Image (tube, rainbow, N blue to C red; front, side, top):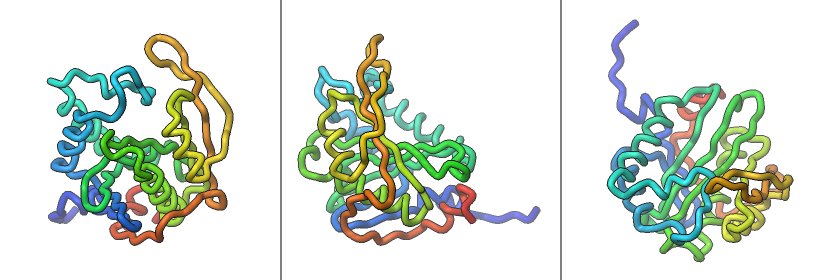
Length: 218
């Protein structure tokens, strides 16, 4: 084995990924971006009496929030492998950091599917940004990473997330139960295929080829 000096982005190519569509930019999260996202999340994502996430991570005590946010994403990096990977990207709107968009997959090379998830800082909600960032991300997954379908889910009492899924072209795919606060809540399941995607602005993508190799596509 010969010694080869590589940058962090060369060793973990997700950090070098950049997707631009109109005013939206999705990009890999370096540590500076992670702490900025943690600080944005502390500023609020949802109301005090709401919980849109199956895992209630926004209820982490403030004194531990930033560290646990960092640890979660460091764990995502450390476990990244073709058999199971999560692709989480920072979202900027007109250059300003606004939230995060991601997909979780298992056995992707066989299944060609994954489930999307996202969050948006509360002060940026209600402006169509959530729809645009999901359109952009799904177009990227279909066009550049070879997804055949994409799933999503949302609690029935989360109208904003349900509306985004419908606007992007996801079709209803059943109703299930998910645990929340020691009880169960109705979850609406959705499925998106390339032909049903309602596309936004065209994509400009850099850094995708190393990511394709990382997940086993090359």
